[in-house]
Every structure is written in structure tokens, then in C-alpha cells.
Length: 283
Length: 227
Image (cartoon, rainbow over all chains, first blue to last red; front, top):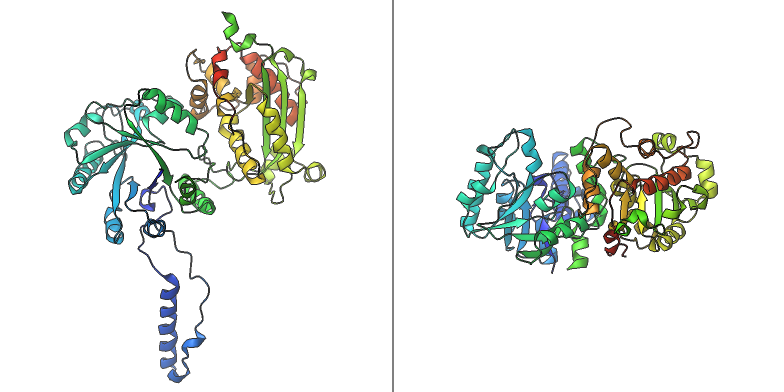
């Protein structure tokens, strides 16, 4: 089984939102009716209003795809959300309705918070902290505040394992993402990210998206854990709904990167598999 | 003992390839030209012994930017006259690539491999996954110039990625010409930038660089090329 890992636009890495399910066509019709009626009343020709004249077959606008809507369509419950901040949590909770969810906070870890030199950037990598329950959520808030206050290096929030230890409880789960993890950074860059799993048993997400570095990271995970000590979970990062939406997502990334579609300058940005459509084929 | 190094295997079959593309978007750029050469290590340095392939690929939605046309020497008339169905060309490339030990090129890990994969998918061809057999002269050159050569036992693919991701902002530091100069491969200045000649030079750079990269036969034990 492959687990879909959603990320919303709140993390600036995805074009998916947490909008609740909305019928835009119906909303538009209601709006158009009331607008036309008010106009006719103002002109004193209320009797001229005929509901049948208000045919509206075109799709109104082009609303963004919503994680909530996708999970309702695909019957994914609980759904996993991985965000770079805590901002989206309340919107997600409010709009999730009957859907169950698991919230994960993706954070930058370094070898030591005490090191504030430029060299410390060579130890940056990502980990995900999942909340098992309400207490876990409260812990995430504390950790997030700590990383932005005590761990901050310029505008960057950081965390290290020594600090994580003081917040750690069974209400949290540590996961190693497939991309930007210590395995990825150590294997594909001249970086030196040192994990410290003495108080925690992490799970590793393993993905296969047709990106050229996938195989190197998979091999890296195998050589880090040759005895299969840690749990590996097949996963699929999702940033847009369909393969056809890749161009929209890439445009969004190019805007962030101050580059163009003809020269995106986005490392290995060559696969349109980070979507629900690709996940559906794998599950 | 020394037989374990790839450089002593004269029958080592090498394919060097290069795509010329309309722009630099790895996902949907249309490669309008594919050139590749196939030869064995024993063929070095005789360029005449190499089997050469140079194809123009037809894409109905090709949109060449002025800059790309200038850099790649693209001529619309020539391209239209010579262009072939990408499916045929890529299938032929796959057939040839299946029988080689090393697949090399300049910056193939940062560019050409992704272009190849997406071009295959668009043309309806199953792309080969040759990540385990790649030899990128850009990465190797950077490593040697920065005094951090490949060490025996290290994962060679990961080593190359490290250098591909390591950006060195020095003009002309890791170009094909710089590689030819570094490895002392003789080039004819007037022919440089001709797509096929570049690949032939690249083939010679691969052969020569194997003397500075301690790559062993273990590298070939990897599953290499898979669909």
C-alpha cells in the first residue's frame, strides 16, 4: 500500500488548498439570479424576470483543487498532511468534516543549534514530526515555537536532536521524508547531516517518482539500515491533483524561484508524478 | 589485480550521447537533435572507429527560442528536411543502449537523462532506466579539478551527483572544452560545437578520464539498465 502524503499551498510547495467542498456552478447561478432580479426591480420591470433565461452551463472560474475534496472523492480517511508550518492546521480541521487526518510538521534539523556559522548550513536536512493525538499537537506547537525562537538562524527555524529530546513523548512519531532527508543530503550533496536516533525509532518514507535521484536515495536508505531495523513505508508526495496540473505547479515554483518556464532552474524538476493520479495507479 | 579497474578492459563498450533542445525545461522541452557514438575503450583515440549516429527529431510543437537557436546552431530548414519520427529514433537508441557497459556524456545527470526520459514518454517509448551505468564527464571533471577524485568503494553514482549539485561559479570551468583541455584530448577548434564532433570528443574524454577515476568492474555488477 502506498500512502499519499498531501501538502497544501500554506507550505508554498503545493497548489492544493484546504477549501471545503463547494459547488461553484450552483453558487454562481444563485448569484446571477439575485443580481438580475435586483437589476430588473431597480428598472421597475420585475415581471420580466424569467428564471429559465438564466442558463449557465459553463464551469464558473477554475477553482484550485482541494485536499478535502480529493480525499472525499478518493475516500481517503485518515489522510496524511505534511506542512512546513502550523498555519494550515485550523483551516484543515475546520473543513475536514467527517474525514480523519494525521498532521505532520516538516522541520529543518541541524547537527547542533549552537553552531550558527555558515558551515552549519551543510548539516541542514528535513524530518517530519507527526502528532498521534491532541497532546502530540500541543507538543508540535511547543517544538515549532522553540525552533522559531531559540533555534532561529536568520529567518530560518531550526531544530536539533538534543533539543527534540526534551519535548519527546509517545504522542509524537518521527518520520524521515524521502526527499531532503539526511540520506538524500549526505548521498547527493557534500553535506554532513548526522542523525541521532537513540531515543526515537523513526519510520522512513520511500518513494519512486521517476526522478533521477530516487535510486540513489533508495540505495542510501538500504545502506543506512541494512538490517531493516526501521520501518519503511511506501509513500507518494502529492503537490497537485492530476499530471496535467504539473505545468501550473511548475509555474508556481518558477515564480518563487524568480525564473521562467523556459529556464526553470529547478533541480531535477522533470517528473509529473507528484499527484493523486500517479498515486491512484500505485495503490 | 589491476584487471579490476575498468581502464584495463579494452572491450568495455561505451555510449556517449547528447541532446540539443529547444529550451532548458527538463519536463517538456523538445529535443530536436540526438547524437550518439558507440565504441570500445580499445577504439580510443581513433575517432574513425566509432559508430556514429546523428538524428533530427520531429516534434509538431517545436518552439525554438532565438537564444537556443543561436547557441545550438539550429536551422529550421535543415531540421524540417531531415527530421524523423522521435519514436523510431528513440527505440533505436534504446536497442543500442541495452548492449553497452557505460552510458556517458557531459552533464547527462543534470540534463540529458531527464530530457531523454520525458521525450520517450511523449513519443510513446518505454524509457530505459540507466541510472546505474551513468558516467558524467562534467561531474568527473569538477571532482578532479577540485582535488576530490572518486575514491574506491564509494558509490560512483552518488559521487557524481555530489559534483553535479555543487555549483562552481567560474566561467568556462567545466565546459566540454575545459574537459578536453584538462584531459589533454586533442580537438579541432573549427569543428568544436558541431554536435557529433562534440560527442566524439566526449567519448575520448571518457576513455582518458578512466585513467584518473579508479572505477572498478564492481560498478558493472549493478543491475544497470532496466526498463
